[in-house]
Length: 438
Figure 1 (cartoon, rainbow, N blue to C red):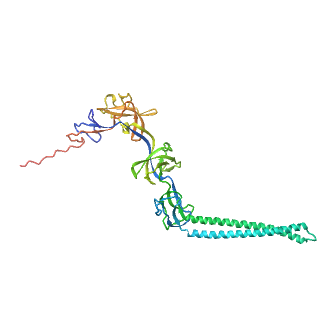
Figure 2 (tube, one colour):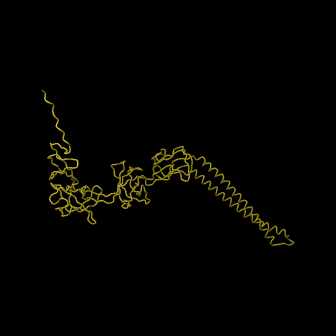
Figure 3 (cartoon, rainbow, N blue to C red):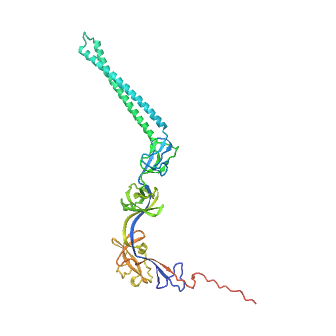
């Protein structure tokens, strides 16, 4: 910090009055011009989610009678590691087992009916063949002395009836075969329902939610009731981040991301943008998009549903000259005695010949920083680059590390032996002493 004496006495402020014969001083707050790595980011919040969740449900209704065992031999519960095909729970299967027995009996009956229909068809075909031979012989003889007309007609009628009976027999066989198929399907369904009473894990993973208890009855409807929630692989996680529509245009797949979680405040995690969901949501007229950030979790520190403070890296600079943003906003007062000669206000800098009042030139952001030199300050016109909201990259001639950059000032009053009085305070009469004794 550099302390400089002002050239003249500071005027009275609105509510404070300087001490008589006091010496007001200005304390300039400075920081050295330095190089550092700079990142422009978009900040947002999100939730840590498993990359893939499997909701294990029940296809049948019934009472939970027992839980299975996990990979370590313990009863299935929250946090249990399970393998694909491992039994998670059993539903009471008494009714479904009886359905299987009943379906098996009906199938056996249908198969017996099919065998009978096929045997009957065989008999009908034999009778039809005999009627065919009788009809052929009668047709050769024709109505004559050897074959009466009635016998001829009887042979023809028997032939036609036998053909019709064969057709009926074929239909009966087809019907019996259909009954067998239906009963086979019923048996398959009954066995499948019996298998559904054993709840198995469809994937390898970890159980993050158990939603039923032993003795609880689950009711299957149009939507299968959820029993367990399994995270397939916690070695890779996602962060679902809500991004405002004003920022979504600067987000793209593959973009680097850093984030922190309250569980590990001193550790920064990294990831990349996986995808941007296009189904935006609106809350109180604010449109946001969900961005999926993929991150490695080999350490196992990230667990589902942690809140994450996320920063999307939009741009970055390495080893850039930077100043605090306050340095670009600060300008000396017009009556400041520490601005030397014609460098007051918007005069030109003797060091670079640039007009310090320049703000933004066409297409190139520009600004002015003030450098403390001895007992005065000097302006430098700079080109403004990347900013992270706190620090800003600057470029310009004659800039170098270590320059004392002014970021603000404090005006203090020197202490004095005389008291500070308000000129508007009325003066009280002097108190008289006691009268003399006589």
